Length: 428
Picture 1 (tube, one colour):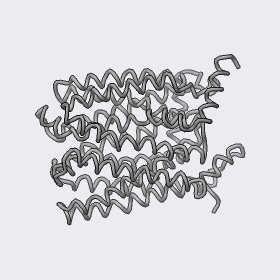
Picture 2 (cartoon, one colour):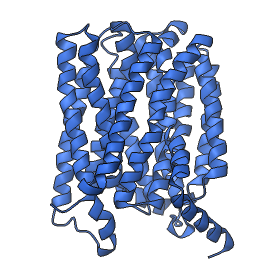
Picture 3 (cartoon, helix red, strand yellow):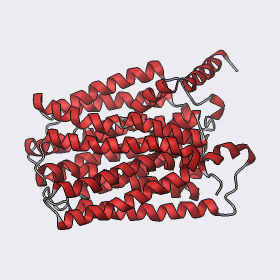
């Protein structure tokens, strides 16, 4: 082992011994999703008015960002398995910062959507790298527990981002939101450069070039157990994307909330998500990721019909719609850490590719549902409720498929991996 690799090994070991520092650094990188999406949500009606465009057109700028995140995760996931985590991360962060400032100067909705595409592509480097870094350092129940703790940091994004966006609208136009995103991206870039070591050793990289890297991706996407857990994850999070993309129009236009009160409601739902993730961190060691994931899917499935009933029979009653929305968002605090740990556990040497597939499903589904929730206009909550119900139903189906794949006789566990699987699938 040469001196550089020895120093890298020492820094990786030190990082696992300081979980708080690791949580802050990796959590900041994971925060690109909430930063890209949530921070400008209170400004969506203002953007539509200022650029003289429709509700659905403005939501396409959200779709463009989600498409960029989807494409970027595939690109940076492959690159991170080939070249390590840090270099692709820095390139992506530079792209994010530049496109954020470009969004602030966009003259029209087409330009804004184009720059949002680039912004999402750059931000994807932080999202895919954060999951890969965790898998580089942890496995099994330790990974599930760390992902739960990570949501405590990530949860600050949905809590703070809309609040920051709403307050910025008091002193600046919607363009000021993107200036702030550029500044925050710059701070994250500096943090990654100074605080995050390379976590993928040379001997675990895909040194065979593009062919080996693509083969690693192929092995990931053809694994049935991985796909079952990944789809469960993607559909569950997709339900929350429905809420995210429609909530400002529904709560402000239909229920009359101000941008500031909307941000408080949005923050309270994010607090529920974080609380559920911390409950998961305490219980996952005893119950296992499989059972906790089932609990999260059941919670989402329980909230969606209640939401539909509230929208259909109490369309102007704010108190009728808030509890089922809270239940649906909270469920993701159980779905994300457990589905992620279960999906990534079998791919220690292709964590970047596996993380990229998770991200593609998550943000790809989000990119599809974001414009669909606006088809009924800015004063109709029924498309949002219907899509959330359909995605919850799909997540149930994928969870059943996942359990069946785990119970297949061929789904054996190597002796060397027993410790990591023991926490994921506790004996009955």
